[in-house]
Length: 291
Image 1 (cartoon, rainbow, N blue to C red):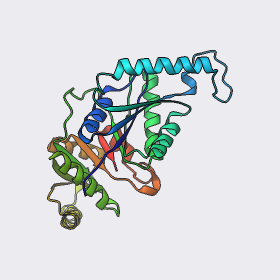
Image 2: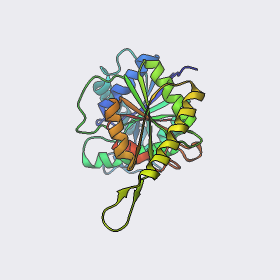
Image 3: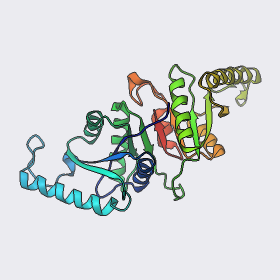
Image 4: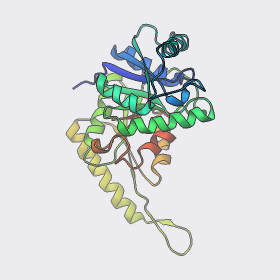
């Protein structure tokens, strides 16, 4: 079964839209021929200072002016980035995370593309909070761009897909989704499993217990081999032990990854039962797709 992304939800902030996330959404939309639902949410605290708000309802004239200004800003900011793509802009008001998650359900979107960062101290705090809430509330896959300041600017491509494998009951779905993405773009696929620490503590510094490591790594290798046999994949495999975020980043660098695919427990959203989920997303060197 192939992967289809017919509709992408792209939340943006005006005038601080994070262009890397926009460009990645545009890349995916052009590849799949997707419609982009471009959403800007006017939060209550972003209304003009001194305006009386009753139940967050604004006068018709003022609301119309906000819509007009936001639409103008969006066009000026993103027009060239989204040329040739079917774009439907929506301007909503209320709590950003609640509105984004709700519109994703109402529109039956296939993917949400969002950033965890913006420009300015306050905006970075706000957007990071919104991103976490969207991850927690959304049921569809979420593509998150961390936009690390140190990341080099380059044309976005997908030549290498890295998939974090937890070896839990949902790992089959995670690997299957990652394999479909890799096949779609003709990309390499690398499966990465990070085990718990294998250090023993006692007098002196902690030291690795070879027998523990051999047993734990051996078990992981056998389980991943079975999983690949069942799914018909032939991905490269990296198994390491220790800090999940740090070692995933090292594996991503080793595989020259362009996107990292992670799984989540459906009953807990993208964060609720995925203990390292948001830490992985926040610290990743590349975009993360939580499926």
